[in-house]
Image (tube, rainbow, N blue to C red; front, top):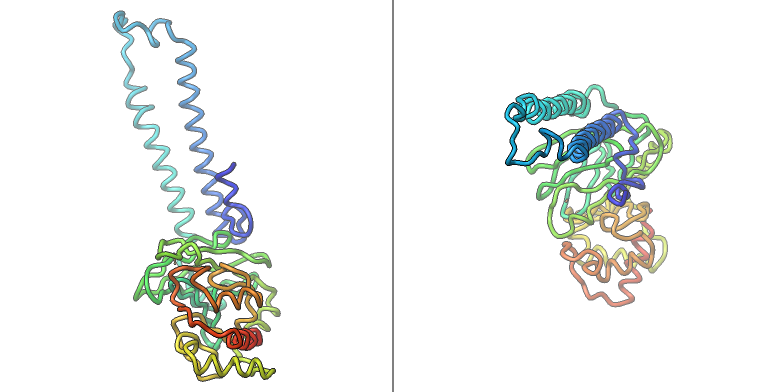
Amino acid sequence: MLALAGCGGSQNALNPHSHQAADIANLFWVMMAVSFGGLALITGLLLFAWLRRGRRGVGADVDDPHPGEKPSWFVVVGMGVGFPLMVIIALFIVGNWAIINVTQAPAESSTAMTVGAVGHQWYWEFRYPGTKAVTADELHIPVGTRVNLVATTADVIHSFWVPALNRKIDTIPGQQNRILLYSNKVGVYRGQCAEYCGLQHAHMAMLVYVQPKAQFRAWLKGQAAPAAPPRTSLARRGEQAFLSGSCSSCHAVRGTPARGFVGPDLTHLASRTTLGGLTIPNTRDYLARWIADSQHFKPGNDMPDFHLRDSQLQALVAYLEGLK
Ligand code: CUA
């Protein structure tokens, strides 16, 4: 039960929201049932032998071997080798035919849209081909829509995994791997990088927002638009600091000269709910602390400490908070 407790919440392979995830969950239960069946059978036989100990032939004194009561071929070869082999082969066939086929890359013609997922050490970049929208760590898709997810990487091997929606798909350098992303229900589903990719592998999570179609279209339109210009004088100072300082060499803000691609695209940073691969919530306080000392929250990430003055920090936060 303690082990299964980890499967709760919004990152739950046993609470599937697609045909694919449902088949994976079913396979889990079938394997679990067969395993427990096998365990019960073996335990039962052991118990049976123990209860009958001392009788002729079963657990009898070795000095009195009772010729003619040698272990039969049926027990040794049949039950010891043949039966387990049959069970394992049957599970293998069920797993392959039932799951591999249904979770393989979808025919592109069968999908309604494509989303690109790019793994970075350590965050997820999401692109919507055909639009300028680029976001990080929080992916939005419309409900009841077959999405062709194309997974690649900017550096090492990662693995895109949203347990409630489908199996894992690795991101391999120089290669594009595809998987179907589909959800039959509006909601927020958590995903996690599932391939060890360095120090902050555990802090490489993502959220999938499954939205009603009209709401998704509105969201995508907003994300595709360039950044809102700063409204207050403090935010304008923040923009200047962002563009003239080091921020813009690593981050992009569409609609400004900032075109860096090392860190996440910040064009609509304020529309996201989390920072740093879901490490901390995207609030004013956390945002300021992240800029001032991101290594505290995520040691080893690429963002250095710029030793900003407090006034600079406040201006930057005001600017970034306006990037809705
Ligand atoms: Cu990326 Cu583990």
